Image 1 (cartoon, helix red, strand yellow):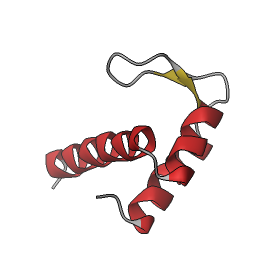
Image 2 (cartoon, rainbow, N blue to C red):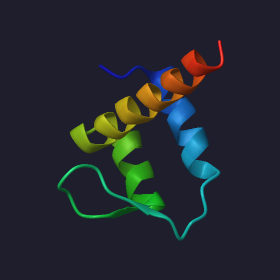
Image 3 (spheres, one colour):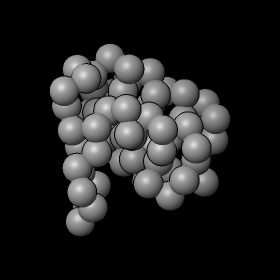
Image 4 (cartoon, rainbow, N blue to C red):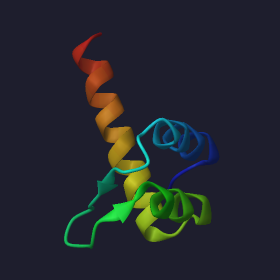
Length: 66
């Protein structure tokens, strides 16, 4: 389950991405930055999965440098 603080953190990261970037999660189609932001804000399964992926990435990076 994704909480509001985690959602805000990932949204802040997305806001800093170039608008031309697209991302894909698994087998799904590519999503634009704006589409991902909508999914995250709505709290749907795609948005939550993206938040979980980003949090896993951030924790991995933090672990490497601790």
